[in-house]
Length: 229
Image (tube, rainbow, N blue to C red; front, side, top):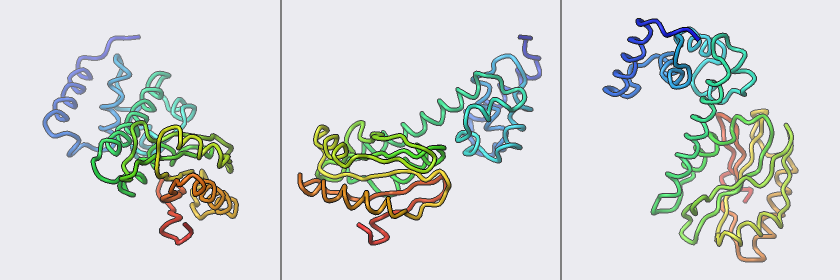
C-alpha cells in the first residue's frame, strides 16, 4: 500500500487535535466518520470514503448499523474498516449496558430502551433477550442475555428457558425484549400470547416480569405502558 501523502497525514492530526480539544463539537458528520476510519485505514486518504459512507447511509448511526457486506461495497472502505466500525458499535452497546449495571438505583426504562435500541434495533433477524434484575430492580452484572436468534420475522423462546436462566442467575425480576426488523413495533398476537405464558411461568417461581419491550431502530413498544402487562 502506498504511503500516506504528507498533507493527508497533517489533516489526520488536525482532526485528532480538534477532538482532543473540543470532543466532537463542531465536527461535520463525515469528519466523525473520517476520524473513525483513521483508526482502521492507516495509509490512505479517508475523506472520500467517509463522504461516500454518509452519502449512501445518511448518518453515523445508519453506518454503524449497516451490515458488513453493504459497508464493503463502498469504494475505498476496504475489508478491515467495516469490521472496525462494527466493533465500535458493539463497544458502544456494551458501554451502555455496563453503565446500567453500575447504577446503585433501579435501572431506568430509558436506559434499557437505549441499550436495546443500540444492541438489537438494527438487526436483520429477530432476537429475544432478557434483562435480569435484583430485588431493587437493579441490573445484575452481565445482566442482559440473548436467549434466542430467529428469522426475519420470528424469534420464539421457550418460557421454561427464560425461567431457568433467571433462577440460575439469581434474578428476582426480568425485562423481556425482542426486535421487529420491519420497524413496526406493534405486538403481534404471537407476541401477546408468548408474554402471557412467560408471565404465568414466572409467577410459579415468584419471578416478576417488569416489562416486555419490542424494539426497532427508532421506536420502542412497552407492554407495561400499553396496559398489556
